[in-house]
Image 1: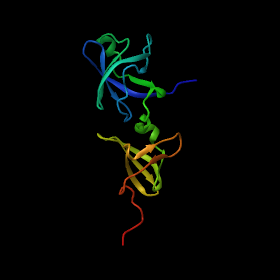
Image 2: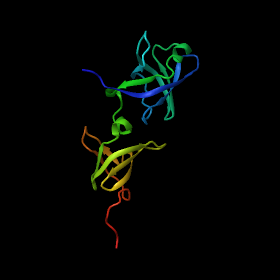
Image 3: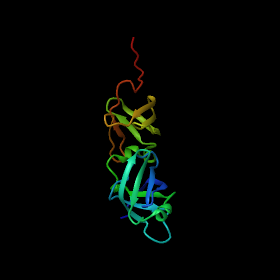
Image 4: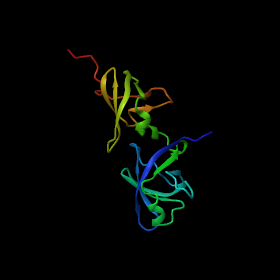
Length: 175
């Protein structure tokens, strides 16, 4: 059975003389590189390993300082600049798909109180959390992607939410 891979980071520059590189997350994902994670470097070099193991990773949401197996110095590291790192989907942490804008666009969202909220039209990446822009029966609804609001997703079923009061504008008006 073929493994599904997902692009999770891009190498932007080298760092120091020991072969470390600076990576940034791609597609609005959070930093997902961690020690012992196997990654594929694409496009691959004509010769040598295309699979590497993350030896160390540190940093924040803007970038991570990463050391990969088989990268011994600045020369090796410089050949990685501009390349993308892929990881097996099965090796990524639970919940990463809640931040995967490519996979989320078009997904249905249903609330436990309001029912169908519509489909995700856009994912806004913010400093504290992402926000889903939904287009549906209530018009445009902005849903913060936080644990207290997004309850979960099961396969192709609508994503379950519990939106706080005031986010969904209903036709009910106070007299």
